[in-house]
Length: 83
Image (cartoon, rainbow, N blue to C red; front, side, top):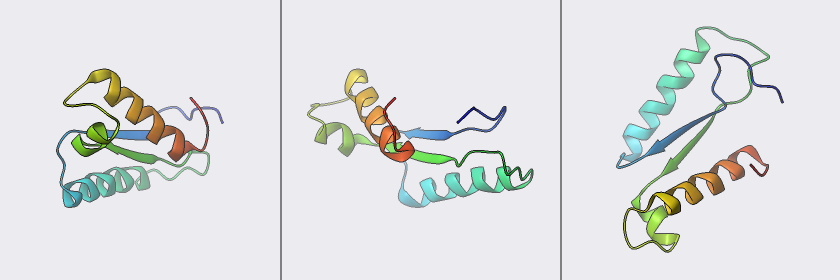
């Protein structure tokens, strides 16, 4: 699907966010997009990568390559396609 100018297809969150902060940030993005409804706009996906995700992927600490792999895997799952 072609990218609609100015509309994000995904919002990536990294770092230490509580679940409530994550929900508030997602809702803020949804609220902002709702101000200018557009049926051509693609669905926005929210992807979060936290410390436990990185550790589960086999890293012993912060590792940019592992973090990128985790984000890509989660983004592919959200979009339903490979990147």
